Image (cartoon, rainbow, N blue to C red):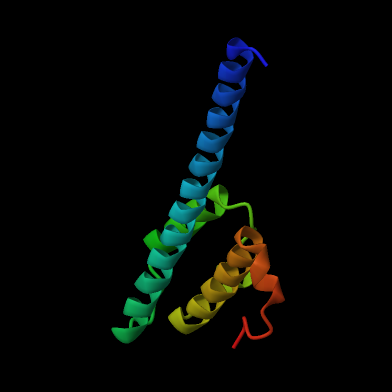
Length: 111
């Protein structure tokens, strides 16, 4: 192997590593965005708010466009914060299953 080949191979490996790290960071941001939505709904439920704010549904729709795992249809039909919270947790579980396939081996992931 020549020095030029080694440099080219090293550069290619570095580019792949950067791509992997960028994807990992994007996945983490999506998970954090999902968690923020869930916390918002939990806070809303603790305040005994009866209506789901339109702005929250817009935030959910925005997240749904950025996540590869489709939002469950029950999110859009939820009429209470409790039902929305349940649907968001279901969606979060599906997202985690997609991003962390090793979770599928856990027998208690829905407990």
